[in-house]
Image (cartoon, rainbow, N blue to C red; front, side, top):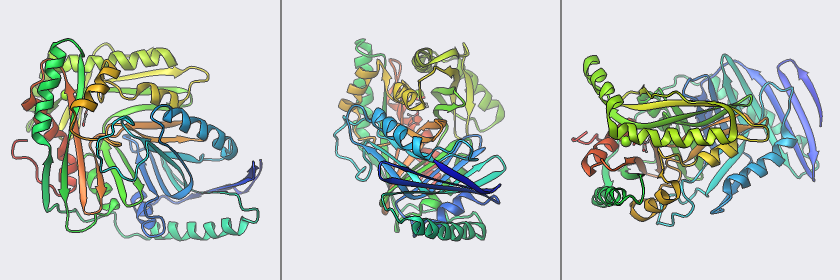
Length: 463
Ligand SMILES: C=C(O[C@@H]1C=C(C(=O)O)C=C[C@H]1O)C(=O)O
Ligand SMILES: [Mg+2]
């Protein structure tokens, strides 16, 4: 790879491999609004935009356009397909000396074997892309990269044209007035298959009491209707305001947009250090400090929720024992308090074994018993049989990996799919022997709240 640096803040690289030419260039820019950069791509890159911000707000990624797309519809092996394709591609585009690396962003479906009719018409079983224009906000720094991967031999003119478009996108974002986007207003509000959901809780608890499984997560969906197609930028802006203590993600696939604000990290790998989160067991926040503390302490002491949580701790610990050294897991959970809800929370960390990768951990962890159940395969079978929906990308891994192998995936809960003038919202809960249909139904309403407020939906009068 012949690379030269034009200046301290402009890094360019070109390489050739098997008839392809790879151009990447990164420039450091003054900080700008990530949402404004995302919005700047609305016309030129509609259907090919990506958004990610970590919980700590120390890392934000925006992608506009697709320089390269990796998909898989394999029922088995989709994680390894994406891993192998990415490994062969990033060998060509990694630039050890560059300030930031090319990033692959996307997500996986929850269950390729779920063949129920679905609203997820534009999403394959695995869907990732290297963006043509990549904005990374890291700490106080801001970088914009261009990626061009082409079979054309005379392609530098195409790259020069991308440089011009990059400068226009940066200008549009930097002069963007305010980061304020109107709140949508739902005109219709439908609980999909509510009675089937309530009946499924009873069926699952009966099966658990018959000792055929120990835990199964069952989810349900709401459908909101609007009088106009929603803006993905406005949706991201509103949901990040409703639940700031979360990962923020957005993934366009043609006309559809999947997004959310999730508190749940699946796994992060940085400099060979791996981190995960056990999050299961829930109760609402209290309206006063005293009530909130009382509810939190009751959650910590509640056998049903502690049992629900322990399945997740056991499974993630086993995965970390297998793929990491020096895995560390606190003996007792703490409380993760976010705006509407508080969860039992146990962080897990370890040092990645040589040869193990982020995608290996994503595959081994998905789904944790917080989203699937225990035992995993039996719980997945019961979800297919009793859950009255096709989850699509809800509750599945969404995230990014760079060309050096660092990256982070979250679990795509507290999320919604925008589809024209409709939005599908998803929420579920861990069903164990002591679950009741009403208590789990109430728990899903609490989980729906941030997205319902963000989209101008009505909160249940029961919640
Ligand atoms: C399944 C969801 O949440 C998961 C289930 C939880 C529970 O049952 O207590 C808590 C956090 C999440 O791991 C959801 O939000 O849809
Ligand atoms: Mg629960």
